[in-house]
Image (cartoon, rainbow, N blue to C red; front, side, top):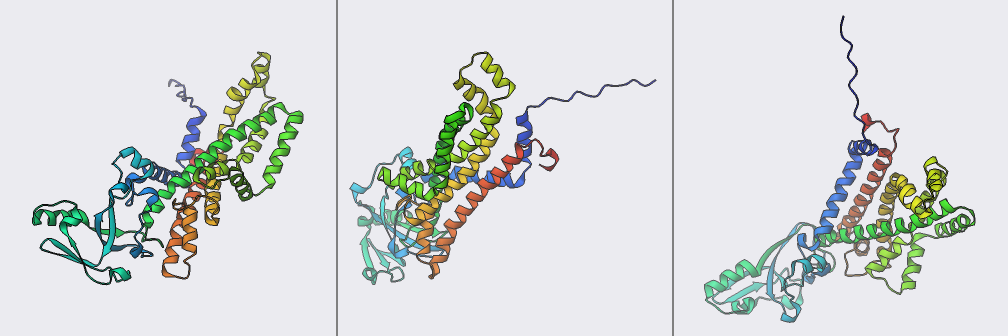
Length: 391
């Protein structure tokens, strides 16, 4: 008689394991997460990875304005005024860039004759450069030496062949550098807005849902009033109240307009959870209300809060872009994507207007799409009815 073998025991896994498996199997969500991670890496590295690491990527060469993507130029680097050159500092460069060490000007061609460099004008763009110019090698390098040494230094250090992969804007600035640096502002304003909205929304929603009564009615009325005011109007009002239109003002203003979504979700979840058995047990044990809310109720809302945070992240990026486009958000020369779209929009009808509008607009669309895809994936991942076989 064959022996009867018992089925192998199944390993108990926490709910977070299944959430993670559903999310990892969702290809659109993983694409969104990958693009967000790439933008985050670029934002964190900042000026360290930019072709133009001047403050706000604002190194302007007027002769190179509105050049198409992929064009190349030969740049002559001349000594910059000593009072405008700061000492190299790795962390200061990462935070706010480095002042240009050279005064740059484009040239058409050059030749070295004896101890002099003779340059031809760059496409005759400048009326001041309509003829050849002569520079002494000592003037360019800033020191004296043998002609051979000076010539080698000039050709290796002071003559640069540069490729502008995404062209230049109307001020002659590198479009790629400004586009990459714009990730800092977009992700920064999204992060600050989400943190402010989560902190304020969780506080107001938790108090309204748990306490109930007239407190709930009062806070619900406040949510309804704020909900009825357009977000852009609220940001404008907050900016006027703070009497500023700087970067940090835009960050705070956008965050203060997005807490209602969080508060309504937290209030609804709190109303359904406050009558559960574990909450009643906590009351019987004499636990303070603040501990019940912070340690036992809010952690049970992690899933919905994460989903709404990703949605608010995308909404904050769009709101900041719209405000900057209108001139009410981040101010020049900061490279905000919305401001860059506005600069390109002013040139529509010209050859440069198309890509100067399309490139930052595409960056905004891809980043917002990525957050929406990730939010949809998180919503499905936290839904226990979503089968793992489809993930």
